[in-house]
Image (cartoon, rainbow, N blue to C red; front, side, top):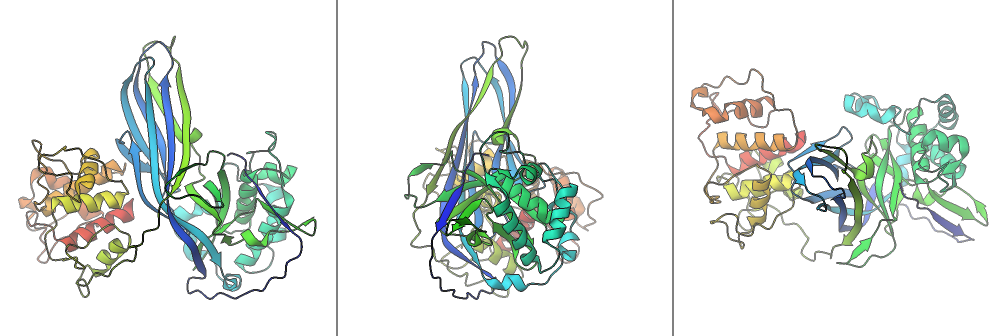
Length: 521
């Protein structure tokens, strides 16, 4: 983690506090769209060929932090597959068959995000809750367990957590832990103290943002409060629109703790504060990130791969093999405000059986109206529409097709999505044609969704399957796909216990299918 800190001097200012009432207990401030770019160079600097380069690169995180939403991403070269770890971090896998001496591969990851400042009102201090429901989900247990550089099981850390969090509500306990960490650690970039983790920060009282974030997280976990370390970029001050800004020295780490009913609450323990020349807890950055101090999330700390990228390769002789990996770019771009960003309502879905599915996807900008403000849920979905919606659900950005298909004009609004879906192996054309206006049968939709799960590295083993009365009508190539969709509850049968494999898929059915798929990835 690169080193970053912020000192906030304070002489004497009279402050008038205004209470804020929010149904969700927080307000998002100055929410804007950004593109984050990370670029890497892989160079064969030796004199021998290398083969079968397998590149694993961090794409980003499926964030449930309230101050950031991930919109789209693009990866160059186009990945062979994706995977997600238990923390929600997504990785892309790229295979390069051969790299000759002197050749290089550029790997570029662009992420489009929506990020803002966040302010919580004081009502969160009064929330009395427990974690029985939250921890009933086994996947959440990691937020209270020790981890790499988060030694919450250390006796000294446990004793301090017990001392700090003996009484109070969850937020009051977290605030006491925050105050301690904010004052206890002295910012020190000395390699003997920097990036050593919670225990080192606790014992030495020195470190950088890693130590502040790790120690807060470890003390919270030792006190029974779910917490995690967040990694990304700290963006201070004004950034010009539509221009790249170098953020290679803005790598940063901070923390979040979980409050039932409110979700993940950010804290920034590494920003120091002085009052009349004396260091005091920085109240400004507990449960608050200012609009002028954006925190752009890249990942949640797990067991990170070095430099967010890992390269494995093979060779015939080790002598003369010299591969170099260079982190080339870390830049962000603030996108212009969309003056037409107000979202219209869909006027024809009320009362439809798929209303909730359609509305959720529409709000997430995954599906689009068919005509004007009408979704037309009863109409059959086209191959172009299905390609676009599925690509948007995964988060893949449009790709310039440059005429890959004879029947897909560059002016086709779905052309970029069709190209992305084809590159990912989700929907393929035939003999240079895509047939964008053709409809998709239910069994073909099942096959496409199985490919999408495979692209995301999901286990696609099938079990006993279904018992539809029209099972014999399902084509051989679609049998496993239909079984899998049924078992995962992505697709179900129709009245009369039939699957109707050759019926066309309606736009309502497509919404249900895609939303169920998104719940699995």
